[in-house]
Structures are given as structure tokens and as C-alpha cells.
Amino acid sequence: MANSEIPTEQWAQVVEKTGGPAVYKKIPVQKPGPDEVLINVKFSGVCHTDLHAMMGDWPLDVKLPLVGGHEGAGVVVAKGELVKDIELGDHAGIKWLNGSCLACSFCMQADEPLCSHALLSGYTVDGSFQQYAIAKAAHVARIPKELDLEAVAPVLCAGITVYKGLKESGARPGQWVAIVGAGGGLGNMAIQYAKAMGLNVVAIDGGAEKGEACKALGSQAYVDFTATSDLVADVKAATPEGLGPHAVLLLAVQEKPFQQATEYVRSRGSVICIGLPAKAYLKAPVFDTVVRMITIKGSYVGNRQDTQEAIDFYARGLIKAPFKTIGLSQLQDVYEMMHENKIVGRYVVDTSK
Ligand code: NAD
Ligand code: ZN
Ligand code: ZN
Image 1 (cartoon, rainbow, N blue to C red):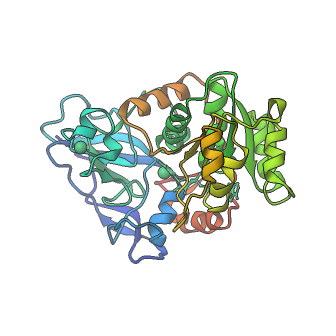
Image 2: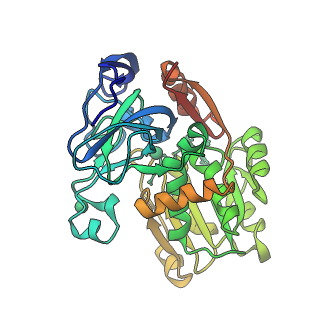
């Protein structure tokens, strides 16, 4: 089934070789397979993962040529014959998990990001930096029609990921969480989700502008890693009795904060690794980790239920993270600002420009 107005060609940003740049050009529109939908992407957020994919930062093969993007919000315009629970005209989102087998022991337990057959949007399959993108119907985010597609786009990766990370941390309402990289795309969302979940926030990032943004979003304290002479002491001092935060969400694209977090996390606290700096390692003193009973773990996007819950927080008006919109044709400019850590919050691309 398809809408007759679907063109045969469309605008897209295509990475042709590792290291980039992304090239704005016309490419054919694909047809969805039996269990897939074709989404007319209206807006897509730009995640730092898209830059990692272009730069070949990770030990995971990337498709080339590649259309990046995995925060794509749009309208379903075609679907395969097996798709029964989504209609043409419905609003839907392309997220990082483009598809999974739905049958392995991970998928059976709703750990589909761990599926060894997972398809990743804008990484192993083409993503949302094009006007028409395909995903498995079972995995597309269901977006209620009353939501603004432009503002909800960043929820589709940044929102889901930080919401899941906060749940994985086990932090409870009234407790404290340190958000490292709080001024970036995931970070701004994390402050809003943490606040909505009743948590107190210590934001960590660099520069006064990011500090202002974090405070405006509701963080109780801001530690500027570029200005402090003792980051560990400053983070601890910002929490009750100077004992440190109950949880740390590591979102920064640098190795150093991954080495520091166990020094300031509260005893019995948890350190949640989410950011994926290239070739980075974790380091923690064994003695402290043991005698202070520290938990260190990774958190990777979210499952379909986490997706709908994260969207529901947004739908209830609890998540208002700032974003700036730019034409899809200017994506490479966003990558350059991102590489220099100059972006406060998220950039969203409008696929019509
Ligand atoms: P971003 O570029 O918008 O934000 C990163 C922020 O970290 C910037 O504001 C930067 O100033 C800050 N930063 C850099 N060094 C720092 C330091 N030493 N201390 C504190 N802050 C520092 O990136 P983003 O889109 O928010 O993505 C962040 C990371 O999360 C990326 O590596 C991305 O690939 C990863 N990611 C992981 C998952 C997952 O499922 N685990 C999902 C999405 C993104
Ligand atoms: Zn992402
Ligand atoms: Zn599976």
C-alpha cells in the first residue's frame, strides 16, 4: 500500500567515505519490504552518534555510502502487506533501533538493543537524513498526532537514551544525579527527564553559556570542567553533606570524565556509561569500588516500551529541551560545530530545506 504522491527521487545527506563530509544530493526513494513502513521524514535531530558514524570512531562496521540520522519524525506514507497496526497518515519516528529479530532471547525479554541481528538507523541501514526513510513497523516510535514533529524529534534518541539511563541508575525521587555533558543534546534532555522524575541535578560541562542553559533547565548546580581546579571536590560539595551524587550519567565525548566519576559518586551509587568517545577506556580504583560498593554499568538506547514512555513524558509537557532548526542541506555545518563542542542542546534538520 502506498500513497500515490511519493516521488521517485528525494534529497538526502550521503556520507560516501569514512571521515566525510556528508554530501547533499538526490537519491532514489526506496520501497518498504513486507514488514516495513516508509516514513516521510519531516524533521530529524542530529546526534553525536551521527558524527561518530561518519568518522568511523567505533569498532563496528558502518554501511557506506551511508545516509545517517536516527531521530527522524514524520508521517507514514507507505507500508508492506504484513503491517497491520499502523496506518498511512500516522505519525511515526525512526529511532536508532531500526529493526531486530523479535525472536532471540534478548528480543523475547524486551532487550532488543542487544539483538545480534539488530538493524541500526544511520549506521547499518540508511537513516533519517533523507526525505523518505524505511524502518521495521514493529520498531518505529508511535507519535501521537497532536505532538509537534520538530520538537519531538530529539526525544527519539536523546530522550529515550537518557530516560533509560536514569531508570538503569536506580536513582529515586529526591536523590541526586550528576549529568556529565549536560550542555549537549543528551545532557539537556537528561536534566529535563531527571527533574520530571523528581531528581536533583548537578550539571557538568564547559563554558558559561552551557552553564546558563543547564540552570535554566532546572539543574541545581553547574560545574564547569574547563574552569574548576578540583572537579571532584566541586561535584561533591554541590550535594547534601558533600557525599556526592547517588548516580552519574556519563554523556560526554571524552575519556577523562569516565576516569573521574567513581571518585565523586556517593558510596552505594551508580555510574552509568552512555557517551561513546572513540577508543576510550574506563578506569576505577578496585579498592574504592569494593569498599564503597560502587556500581558501574553501560546503558544503550531503550526498548519499545522505554520509547513510548519517553514520548509520553514529552506529551505530558514535562520535557522542554531547547533545539535549533536548520535545513537538511546544512548538516555538515552542524557536524563542524558539534566537533568543537559548540552546540548548546540539539540541532534539528528540516528535510524540506
Ligand atoms: P553532544 O556533542 O551534543 O554533547 C556532548 C557534551 O559533552 C558537549 O556539551 C560537550 O561540551 C560535553 N563535554 C565534553 N567534554 C566534557 C567533559 N570533560 N566533561 C563534561 N562535559 C564534557 O553529544 P550528544 O549527542 O549528547 O551525544 C553524547 C554521546 O552519547 C555521544 O558519544 C553519543 O554517541 C552517545 N550516545 C550514546 C547512546 C547510547 O545508547 N549509549 C545514545 C545516543 C548517544
Ligand atoms: Zn543518537
Ligand atoms: Zn533478536
